[in-house]
Amino acid sequence: MHPARRLWSALEPLHDVVYFAPPVRDAGKALGLRGFWMTYFAFRAAPLGPVGSGAVLATFAGFEPEMVAKALPDAWSRATPEQCLAARLEVSASALRGVGVDEQACAATAAELAPVLAAADPTGRPLYAGNAGLPVPADPVEALWQAATTLREHRGDGHVAALVAAGVSGLEALLLQVGLGKFPDRVMRSVRGWSEQEWEQAAAGLRGRGLLTDDGTLTPAGRDLLTEVEDRTDAVSWHGGLAALGEAGVDRIVAGLRPSVVKLWSSGMLPETNPTGLPPQRS
Image (cartoon, rainbow, N blue to C red):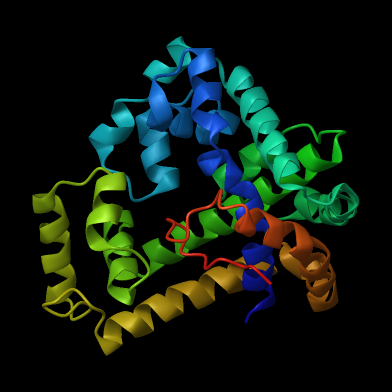
């Protein structure tokens, strides 16, 4: 596995508590946000400032426009980006502490990632740049969560660029992942807000390009395209900043975080079938 992808597999679960920890929704409601999805969009977009739905559609990729428009910009009339940043950091660090992450490993990893975060290339990476510009928390668990978040957005920005270069929209990317067998069709369609008609129209377009079969699975061409996108994502993540760690640095971080990542997965907080496609790590 490419070292950039190995590092992502260790950092992504730590970041993901901001979506799946039970108190997240309540943290948003305490600020005046309406429910899970407004909280999700506001918390994740907060490093960009009080942006509207257009910026989120462009950077998050894959969401149905009206779904985003129901949350933004209305969220900013209820809570400021600064309040959302503080709340997401607090609730995420609390969740990680609750499952028993190793604070010494958090501190060591955050320190090792700090120069990488400071020097990584921000070109075409708005979510990375927004997160990289935030103050580094003094608390080791908060610092690690912020570092994990910044680097996962760095990878995500690069992934969106790779999709665009391959001529794949956010909606089409979801269908390709479903075709690969990573997610159930109905679940992914509903959590991203697409109607059955919109979903089928996109699927028809991919079938017309020879990327999906009639039963929704990937053709060999579709599999090759998805592999190309993932390989390009790894490459631009690595050459856009992670190479400064070297493979030995990646190995060291992955090994140091493994006990904490295993505890997190074993806690049941993260769903086994999740939008990132990450398989559980329990050993």
